[in-house]
Length: 258
Image (tube, rainbow, N blue to C red; front, side, top):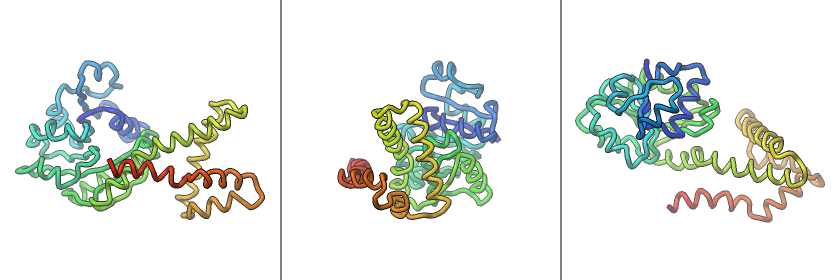
């Protein structure tokens, strides 16, 4: 089954590359369009470049909608009848099942909303999936199979989906800031910066994997490493003294209050 992308920005690129890296698809099985056809054609990596969203709908059985949330209705509504027979996977943050039902009013288009994140590009992502959808069981299994190629999946009710998405899809930026800060701190004392970033990134990846596989409480993981009288506890106490938890929470507070 051919896969389509309506919109091909950073997130669509991450999904595309992730599916390629997972050996799930080949570029020739992908049909995509972007706002600037000529520029997109120059950077497209072997996939079929379409001039319009209608062309994507005609060629693909599964269509990722990856345009900005404010553009979804104007792009999708004119072609809603052409999307019959497709499975629509929305990547537009903030647009849930009920909103798409309004957009697709009068049709029987199948659709489901998700929030992926950029680590999908290396098949290490987490995709939040809205529990409310109108897919059949076989269609849902197909979608789950595709998204599992990109990493882990998590189903949540509509009212919890966007909060989880703030953590999962915005979180890579916060994590990258931590990687940069810790790496730069090591470089300050003489460690090669590129080596510092590699070491910190692997440490972050490994710590996350440890928590997931062992099911450990993060607070207990701190205690295990920060033994009394050791060097780690000095750094932990410094972060606690700077209200590290509160600083991190400020990021979510800012999003929630925006």
